[in-house]
View 1 (tube, rainbow, N blue to C red):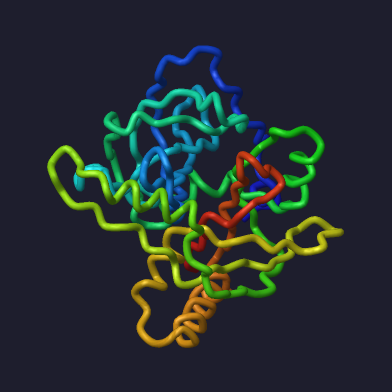
View 2 (cartoon, one colour; view 1 turned 135 degrees about the vertical axis):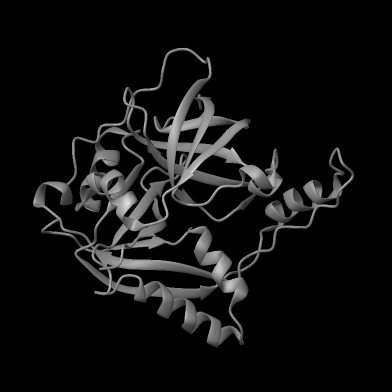
Length: 276
């Protein structure tokens, strides 16, 4: 990877359009965050990716999406290319945020080998998480999505998840208590068993390290499949998410995103790790 690609192209986000008419966009899905309870939608997933439209390339966030409510034919995976109509999310100050019209979603392709993903994704890799944070501090709302290559991964912290709060559980109970239009039962969203954080140092010379929560769908899905008691599962999670940052991979970078209400709080939404 060249030094130029390490620190990325000019990455100022596209301004939101002044009107609220839907825009058709093609998106390479790079992020599927773990689902969370929602009062309006039962449960929602934050999805992000790279727009492939020549007139408006760059990061985009699609929210809300109730993934389990999607028809099987349009449920998508990371590195799928999808087309979808969306409108600017006016209640969200972050310019990358759009409200998708979920019924318009169409899957176009899946970029299975890393070789097909790399030319699209790697120009967006940059080295300074400190710089992304400073931009938010200086002039929020600033860019809220990025792909950061750490200089050094210091560790993964794993702690038991405390379970849903009373407010979150009430949202789940209300959603499960409804009967959908086909009369199907809804199963409640289970809380993860564990929470996790990456600790790393970015390429900023004076970086004091970053500790960011792991909100990746895969982090939650894996812990539900792992056998054994809590200590065994925690150890396996830690080993897995450290291993994907090892020298066995040609590039390691973190997809990061912030919160609308706490824009200085960034989390790791996924990991980019093509093998050598």
